[in-house]
Length: 356
Image 1 (spheres, rainbow, N blue to C red):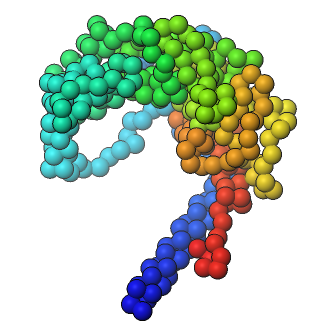
Image 2 (image 1 turned 90 degrees about the vertical axis):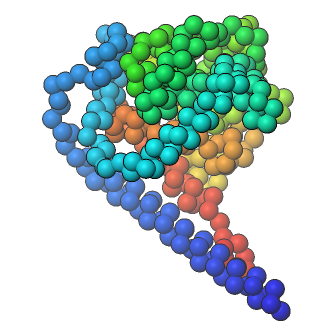
């Protein structure tokens, strides 16, 4: 009897929490709809200054990039809060402890195995931990550690590897990591590395649709999709590259990277290319998880905001935010709004008889 009573109480609490979360989601959708209906505020007067990036590097905006120039956002004055010095210093000490162990036992490897104190390469030996740490070391003002990491990238990092890498993971981790380090330091070496790496990834995009394969061999350029996807490319993988490629176009003045990423979104969302897409009523903003890059056909109709679908929707709103709400990127905001409305209409369900 006590166990039944406990379970009933837990079920009641869970029902209350579910109701609260559903109410918050409804409020968020209402806010998005109101923002959509309201006219945009007048832009602030443009400052007669150049950005840190433009001032410190030859990479800025080129003559063929006028349509991307406005993406150079001025972040000055966004954050003005007092630091919690004790907490900040504790986090910095923890980072230094972790980094010292990696540098002592596995420097240059993708990761450190803490028990055996040996390095391990699951990312092709591209130094994943170093790439992931560049911006953190710089922000934390760990100058010596940052310089050693930076020099490893400049002098020892090589992309000439017989390694089948995930195109998606390489873009978000390595290309994204280099761009973050560049934006903080102004060091053009990172952009040079980005360009070399992205050229290595280009063969994955050589498909009739422009939808990239999931996997590429960095040395040979041979590209493929895994057998478990039935040779299809995955929505969350080919749809998660726009932030990095638009930024790379902006800093190099070469719009080919942004156009390549934009073509993927255009193909996926073009009604003519969705001849076999079937979505439930009210689900116009949702897309299946697998698309064949050769035929352009969706290979199943499963829809999910979980694995294999999540970051496609995440990048829609992030790109719009990255561009400061630029009208040129309004299409991404519209796609995100449509996805959120469809999520509310199609994916949120309640159980019976508990209505959870």
